[in-house]
Amino acid sequence: MHVERVGFIGAGNIAESMIRGIITSGFLDPGQIVVSDIRREQLDRLHKMLGPTIAASNRENVTQSTIVFLAVKPSQVVDVAHEIRTVARADQYVVSIAAGTSLKRIREALGGKPRLCRIMPNLSASVRKSIISLFADPSLHTDDLAPVCSLLSRIGRVFRVDDEKLMAVITALSGSAPAYYLMMAEALVSYGVSQGMTREMATAMILGTMEGSAAWALNSKFSMGDLWRKVVTPGGTTEAGMQYYDERGFLDIFVEGLRRSTCRARELGDQ
Image (cartoon, rainbow, N blue to C red; front, side):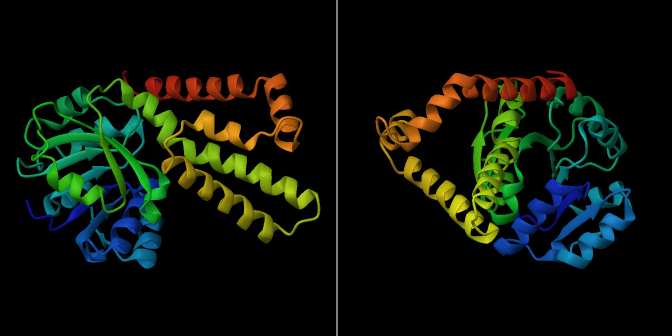
């Protein structure tokens, strides 16, 4: 299937991030992306900034698009699916970005015509570095999903998930994790500034260290536990910090936060 136009119902942060990534990848021209949202000011801002086509309604958006992303809040996705039911086509893909809401519920509202899947990307899509988990209707094979995966691969790396129950966990990990990483980075930068560094220097050093650490781990045959232990010299500076974190139960606290994020993803939907 040739992707002529891609629709986004919803113009919030994740939609903007994905649109920016798709456009900067060169895969589609701005005019080939269609956006609809009840917030006219948000549509005007997005059009002025990135140039996508603005649809007058969600139904008009669907009539123009080959792939339609439901980029609305979990509490809205079923209503939107029901709204577009009569204009959805068998030659289309409908892709939900809503956390928690199962394909079964969306299918009941949407009807049986379009091919249906759900994804969990993150805001790194704007720089084409998103991790994107995809769960599809079991009847869809790899070849069936080629147009969607081809599009998504322009903004990140796609992982197909076979068990829909894992999507809540993935929401806590790759969906929410950018906030956790950047919160930690902000704390590191703030500490550097408190000790006399300029914010510009501290930010460049901390983000560069995070990038380098990720590259080191990705290119190493060792586990992450083995790698971080290589940094810890007995009696050294890193050990002093690690001992404090151990005493405070840092890892337990962090994992509990992930558990709560996962529970919230399930509460938002029906898993």
